[in-house]
Image 1 (cartoon, rainbow, N blue to C red):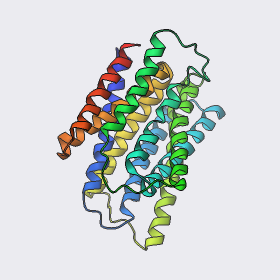
Image 2: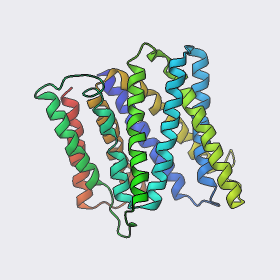
Image 3: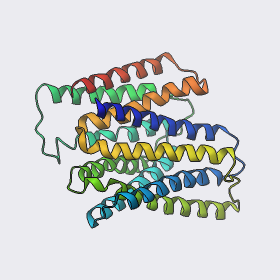
Length: 297
């Protein structure tokens, strides 16, 4: 019960992060470098918290350092190529392909983890996981006017897909090792790398556009960024812990699917976004799949 309680906290934190980003996105941006400063502030918040926690908790090793570096590189690659995919091809299908990457981590126990597939429990989980992907697809807003698919777009999607999927594998491998208690150090390394990457991207964009960010430390945009950073910290810490104590075929579909559908509900409640019957069916069906996967544990 405790694991599902903190899993719920993680899912709500992921929703909170999405809401904070959405609130900022809907506010008027004064120049093109503002979104990159927003991202930089939120990653700095995470990096500072994790660095301070790692100094208190202690525990440093080369193994965790390498895992943290790998997680940092994969996270930034996933984010970068997700943006490139969204900007160069159909948004609806980009989101579906990249979101589906949780299947890679979810199947880890049955492949690299060496866990045998048990009948009928595991067969039910795998079947429901596939159905969950279908409901994720129909729950998303398929707006007309999406750009056409190209080989370049497919390449961006594939990089983002595999980078996202291997994030979960790195988490799982580290948290089932003898170094699992060094999670704060691992995430400190990850977010220091993310901060350096975000700072570099901001520098390039601001130099290219000749515009510095208009976001100040006390502006509304900064408040949204602080909130996004705190939610980011909570969800990453909990998710890393849960990746080592829950079966991968349960944890990854629940946390990814749960955040997608809860964010959809939040968009209706907080942003008054209209929803179609098709999307409603997708949300209800997806939630039902999540419940079924949870019941198979």
